[in-house]
Length: 115
View 1: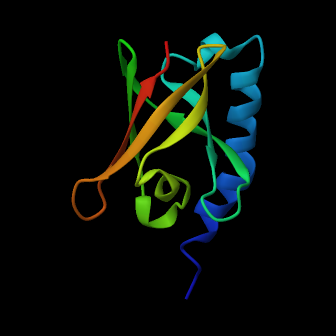
View 2: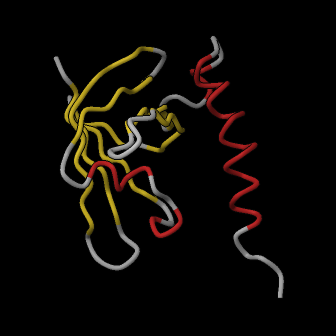
């Protein structure tokens, strides 16, 4: 039986790196209206993890849908709320994030940006 996780793992290793590179480059306006980089600190390890995310913004609040949350770990560091850093439309912001589980397979992260 083929490993169904393999395509997902390959995208995380290669595709996410390419998107992150684009979001850090002068060409970021091509994708930065829908995509940003979030940096989350691991609760147990203290290591920082930076990855591209899709978002919707209303004022100082971002809503981040977590696609396939059962396959991802980063959002679990935000269950009790935690500070995050975001590269949003070419600028670095800080904020407070909180992950909300809204049922099986449905997770969103709400970020309130600092002033």
